[in-house]
Image (cartoon, rainbow, N blue to C red):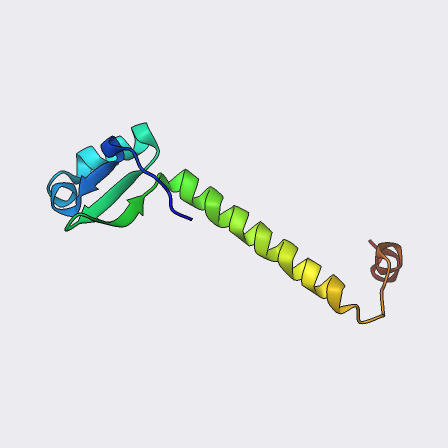
Length: 90
């Protein structure tokens, strides 16, 4: 999957290093900035909230995949939530 970027989202790494404050302002305004080096896209700068949201979404997805995998393995023994609550006084 190849993502497309608008021209105004791309900044050279040399410009970014010289004008980091301005790049960070642009990240807040535009939602992301893409760094290029030698006319190749190298990295993406995201607002911290967006990055943390992506990490949280990924963790949820991995948990869901783990649950799906465990269900597919079907080890045969299941314990109901009610019996666990009763056993541990929940």
